[in-house]
Length: 328
Image (tube, rainbow, N blue to C red):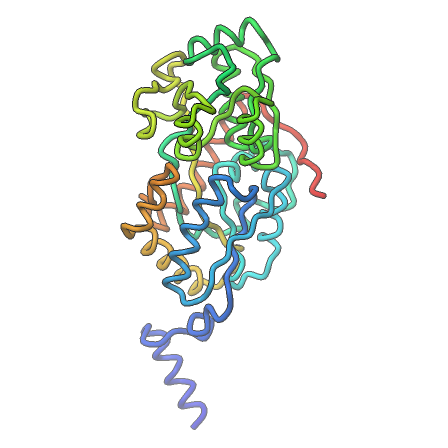
């Protein structure tokens, strides 16, 4: 009798008419999305949009937890070594690929220790903004000023090897200048110091700096992407204004530990993608200067691999290579 029941259940599972136990029971407790950046940064805003939609669709609270430090390496190691049960996820951005290319030794393998869940957001444009006291108003004027004052004009970033650091390093190489890099433990504290005039420049998501520009606390210098920012349509890109070929873009996505059961991965992929393409999610992302996902989960998984290859080439061009920062 028991053998017959087991055989019948196995047959139904094979036909996809009932779900395996791991999927049927999942989730039965809150899910965490770990972000490797300080609360208040763009990553925090994007993660919360994903958390809201996953909470709605999965029937369990999805919590966002900030674990900043060491340019995201601390949080990434934590998730890589967490139980692969679908309850601990990681929000990453371009820095995930950058770290793999920049640091000679990491406590995890960015390619082999994670499985891609889905794309969360694509910032419409990174934009270079300045403190109003800086006597430069566009890319050309900034380059001229930087050549007159090597190592005297500072830009803040979310950490060594972060995409905001990469944007400044690429600017230095392509413009043949020496801006001084000041790394922070996240974009939020870097932005605070920019507003206070402790640093003069920063590359950041256009939607996050827009209120400060409107208030006269910052001024836009140039967009960093292929096209102008919707928030700053009158501000040229660096490519069209001063540095042909200069392009820096970013992306934000969610990963899980590589051994997460396939049925849980499929569930997370489906629920997140379906949630984020809804109108209210698109509107929330637009408010913080980002587009909703334009890649399916499968396309995102392939994109992560190609982005790692492209980033490796860019890092070699810039000449960034260093030992991993201390994790404690």
